[in-house]
Amino acid sequence: MVGRSSFLIVANRLPVDRVVEQDGTASWRRSPGGLVTAIAPVMQRRHGAWLGWPGAPDEELEPFEQDGMNLISIPLTAEEIELYYEGFSNATLWPLYHDVVAPPVFERSMWEAYRAVNERFARAAAAHAEQGAVVWVQDYQLQLVPAMLRELRPDLRIGFFLHIPFPPVELFWQLPWRRELVQGLLGADLVGFQLPGGAANFRRLCRRLLGVPYKGSEIFLEDRIVRTQAFPISVDFGELDEMVRRPEVVSRAKEIRMELGDPEHVLLGVDRLDYTKGIGQRLEAFGELLKDGRITPGEAVFVQIATPSRERVEEYRRLRDDIELQVGRINGETSEFGSQPIQYFHQSYPKDELAALYLAADVMVVTPLRDGMNLVAKEYVACHHDLNGALVLSEFAGAADELRQAFLVNPYDVEDLKRQMLAAMRATPHELARRMRTMRRRVATYDVDRWASEFLSSLESPSASEPAMSRSASWPSG
Image 1 (cartoon, rainbow, N blue to C red):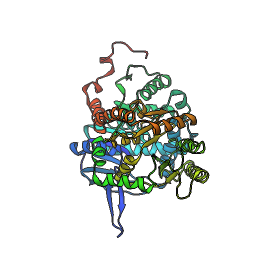
Image 2: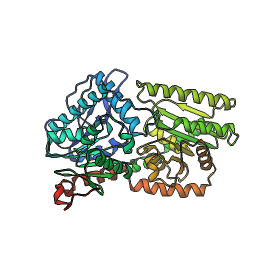
Image 3: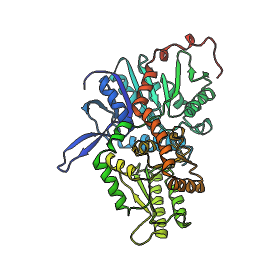
Image 4: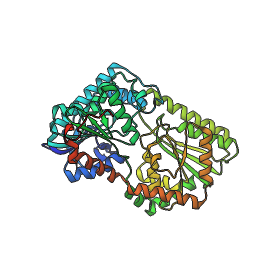
């Protein structure tokens, strides 16, 4: 791709993964995931460009095109990956924004790398954006980019979306660089959050930290207004609904149940291996149900998919060891000959295999201790056109705000987890159909395409760029 674009996505990673064939030849394949699914069609229609890191250290690539998308590579050194990505992004911001489930690490070298990488992204976006272009910055790794980009290119329309929770003021206050991050986000015209609570936390923080007034969803700076709004992200309902109707996926779902010994109940967890996901809590609850005799090993099997994640970070290596020890202990104490009640897989699966797993599962167990949204819950609902299946869902997942007909649970309460898992297994077909029908209607209506289109419509609306004083006769106190 040569020249500038009128629409830019700026994200930590490019939307493609490198695939190496058996003969050693390398190619690119579109990455799985909701963000790419949502934005790729928009980019193709607008002939936009996507800026991001290609995934390998010290790699400099010329701009290239893949799957109808113009891609611009932002290089990172091995040291920057360690300090900016594994360090400040995932050892500092990630735990801080997830209710300090693990203690955040505050190190100046990490912060300095984060700031330097954000500046590189901002300069690249400034260089590739047309006059008056729309730039949509994604997620917690790039929170300084909006202000840096605005300073370089005040003509741009800048949006930012945070895919993870935004913490309350009391937690955010711990961050030594709290002022810089908030000022970074205020460089955007529109800051989007998963839930209204996150947007409210940000507005309160702006007033307390910077003395900036707000009224309703609008934050009033001296020369402009920054709007804050919730845009709950979703999944490609149509694609998933079509996929699970394919004969080969239906057949694979039946095979999975047979391979598990055709139990009465198949429970399923699908998560990135992360300490925020509540994997240990759900396994503890399932183990206690087995020990209590309320379910038997032949009656129920729990399949836990734990996708490898951030394995160079010590906290994640320790978590993997803990989960694998827990699985071994529960299976050792409760297994019968020829069957293990917990089937644990530390690997990734393609989309069609996951769809078959969703279809095969009677109970989907989604129990994060804190989660911005959790798309697995919505994927499961999209895969059950048969109206079978039960969703056990943490109250601390963003999806719980929309999927109120799930079996909602407090994952910190093992007894509550046991009650809700058992209730999901014992529910009548009529009750399951009633719950699933309502949840499917919600996910079908508010799909990923609607999420993207509503954010961009709000960002590009004329009111987004009106100067502050023309819209407010008085200076609101909040």
